[in-house]
Amino acid sequence: AALIALVGLVLLLLPDTDLEGALVFVERLRVAVATTALTPGDEPLYRTASFGLTGLRIVDDVDSLLRRADSALRRAKEAGKDRLAYEI
Image 1: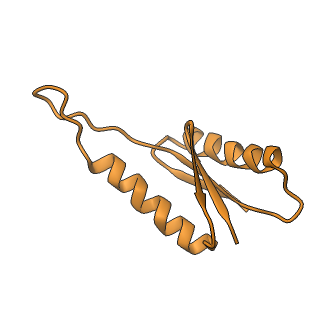
Image 2: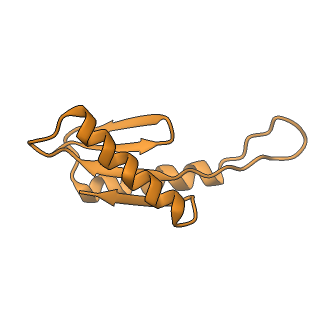
Image 3: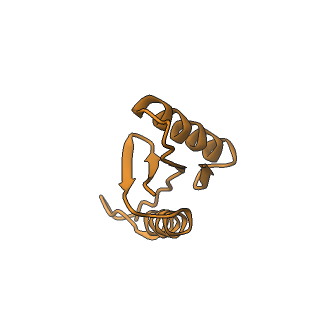
């Protein structure tokens, strides 16, 4: 199965990845973003990321796939940001 994760304006394609594998990958990425400091000046800058994850269905076209990923991303942000939500 192929899964996609929508991250703000970044689309991640995860070919040959099942739901469990995608959840593990995206959670590791979320933690890495949150714990990696940018240092543009003297003070470290931390940021967070929310992720919307969905799986490819045989009846999907690009629009339906992106709508589901976007819906999951909105739910993640509404739940408090720095989260992962999925819709399979």
